[in-house]
Image 1: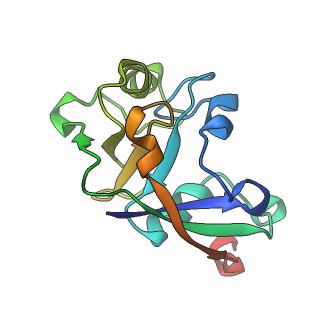
Image 2: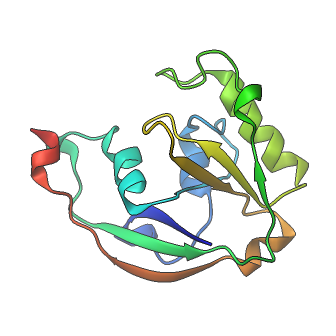
Length: 152
């Protein structure tokens, strides 16, 4: 399976989860390493653009194409188990606990969760500390400039 991730160029050569651990996000608390990916390039762009303005838009984004081999099981978080207001902004500790529990249990390497930005699309959370993580590879990367009209 191919998933997508936008990254700043200086961080695009490897997958680590360190960036997400520095601040915490919807599916992880501060200190929990996790790699956020999307099921399409468009979703990867949307997930990043909701946090930026034209004034703060870096010019060095790179789109990563990441292969998750069929031998790596993908767990799916059931929508019926989502807490109320799971997609609220700012995010709640309840969604962070879902991601943290997944990461620390090490029962799976990849967790499929719904996107809070684009209804009907999905994000894939990769656990860099799982034994199967070494099977997941960046297969392609290329410059990805944002169209400034997105921020008008």
